[in-house]
Structure formats: structure tokens, C-alpha cells
Amino acid sequence: MPKQKTNRIPQTDLLEHPAVKAWGELRPERVEPAQIEVLKQKQKGTINRLAGVGPGNSAVIAKRCRHDKAVIERAVYEKVLLHLPVTTLHYYGCVEEEDNQFWWLFLEDVGDQRYSPSVEAHRTLAARWLGAMHTAAEGLRAKIPLPNRGPDYYLMYLRAVLEAIPQIQPIPSLKATDQTILRHIVALCEFLEAHWSQVETFCDRMPRTFIHGDCLVTNVRVQPNQAGLTLAPFDWASAGWGLPATDLGKLGLPYRSVPPTEPDYAAYWSIVRDQWPSLNVQSIQQLAKLGQMFWSLKVISLGVREFDYDEAHIESIINKLNVYESVLANTIRSARWEN
Image (cartoon, rainbow, N blue to C red; front, side, top):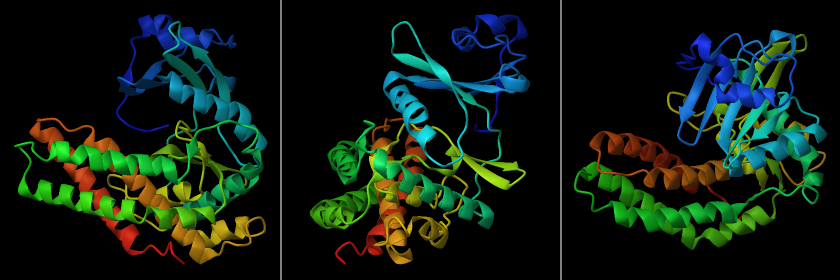
């Protein structure tokens, strides 16, 4: 899970911690952790590391999240990943809180070695892992109900952007450069909306399968073993049925200080070509660009919802919008959906 600044819970309070109480309901051999580290804490959820309570005194990740997200993650761990020939972290179970608004998910701690797009071996490993997951999961679509993450899902975000930005533009603290970025985003979204039928036509020719949906570098770990390296993606709350585009594209996106890097398209094709003979390296590359466009629309839509009149907060949001406006513009320029 994410390596970041952590806070440790005082030793005297361990057994009273909500994560430990929830863990105890699963009847593990050991309940009291050696320590608790708070890895992430937000209003919408928390992530804690419970040291020493797992098999062989290993750590367990206790993730508290909203019911709607937990339902998806639980279905992925219990009904999807078990049937796929890919490595994954161990899922210990979940516990619902009394009001059912939040659930606790308990997962294997897969360490802190993040997937690095600058490492060729990581890119090849990720491409082959995604290819194996995508092709193997295609046949499960009719059996397991999960959200639709197709083009309509991202069209919803596009329209949300067009609706929200005119309400933001009158904010007096916005600089001229900020207004320029917002105008560029509107122009790009209007162009996309007018040409969305071409996007849909392209998507209709592409395979639909199970996707992670949030396959950023922060949600993927690499673990060494005797055979070499294994991949362990986590955070499946955005999973569903969609195009491979979404996962392929996200692994190549910039994220904070991580520069954009092209995924290993040839490695992905080497895995999927037998099941999806209509795809080639060029069409896979185009799928990845489409996935980057989809994700940019989502990030921009979520970003414009966060505006307020705090100048420091506005600057942070504008910086993010500026990055994804560039990604959106580049993917539109490279698009060949009509072909």
C-alpha cells in the first residue's frame, strides 16, 4: 500500500481501535496488533496497517471505505479475481459497520515497492498481467454484475465538465491564465461531444471485458519472488465492465512527479492476440490513447467540483487541470477513431 507519512496509534489504545474490533469479527488467530500505522485518513475513508496479525505475523491492511465502493471491491475479490490466472493480493474478508454506510476490507500488505513506469521490466510485467486479466475475464461478463465503465460512463463526466465550468468562471480570484485553461477545456469538451459518435463507433469494434478502472502507478505494487517479479494491483473500487483502453492508458499517464511513459504495447499484444486477433500493436496503442482521454475527462470533472474561493486551493486544482488539459488535447490530436 502507499508509502507515505504515517501516524502510529498509541500502544494503550490498540484493542479499542475500530479497525482492530472489526478485524476481530473475522475470528483471526491473532487480534491485537504489535502496532497500528495510519497510512491514509480522509473523510471518505481510512487505511491502516495492522502489524503482526496476519499469517506468520505478517501485516494486514485495514481499509475503511464507503458502502458503494466496498460492494464493488468485495465482488472483485470474491467473485472475479479467484477465476483469473493472474497474481493478486490475499483478501481476508470484510466487516460491515452497524449503520452499513462504511465497511472494513482486510487485505494482504503487499509492501511499498511501487510499479515504476521508468523500469522496462515493470512495464513488460504490467502489460502481460493486464493482457492475461483482460482476456481471461471476458467470459465472466454475463455472470458477475459490475458497473458499466464503457464510453457512456465517461460521456457523463464530459457533460458534467461543460455544466460546471461556466459556474466557476465568474470566481473573482481566478487569474487570466486560469481562465485560459478553463476555456481550453471547454473547447476540447465541446469538440469531443460533437464527435462522440466517432468514439462510440471505434469502441464498438473493440473487446469489452473486466477492467481495474483506476490502474494508476500508485495502485500497483511489484513484489520480487523466486521466479522474478509479480504484480499486485489493489484499490478496485472503480472496477467494472469496459474497454481495455482504460487500464492501458492509465499506466502511461503522468501522476504528480511521475512522467508519462508508453506502456509495453508489444508485450500486451503477445498475450491477447490469440483471443483478440483483430487487434494489433497500432490498435492497442490507439486504445491506450483513448483510455487516457477517458481518464482525463474523469479527473477534470472531479477537479472542477472542488473549486472554492480559497486561492491556494484554486492554484492546486488549476495545476492539476492544466496537466490533464494537455493530456486531453494530445489524445484528441492523435485520435484516429474514424478509421
